[in-house]
View 1 (cartoon, rainbow, N blue to C red):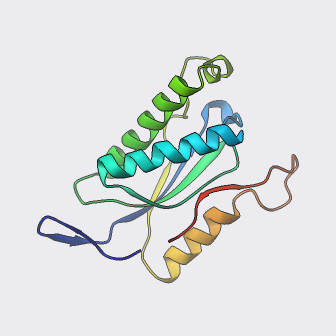
View 2 (cartoon, rainbow, N blue to C red):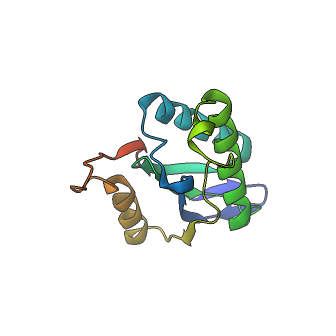
Length: 149
């Protein structure tokens, strides 16, 4: 990813975020939901200036490799991504709520780590793109929403 520019700032702030679907249910798998999630993430990019470099899911959790402006804290990034994607998925696919007791799409919490450019960033990108691709018990295959630019 190139160095980003904002008003009077030049920055490289990159995170690897992992969030899990509530109860680890595989609710992101249908192609229609994956396409819609991609659309929502692209809209988040436009509105919040958060760039999704690489995104992957195996249905029950999602990995995001993102570039963010310095105005957002890690907890704000979680809030933006989790709340908007959940709300929009529930609006578009109301049947999802029947799968989840309590009406939350994502589990509380998640993982966030900073990522340096170069070797570290390449390792994270490869890891995200390979998620779920090894032979698993239920043989689900990884869906790659975005590839590194």
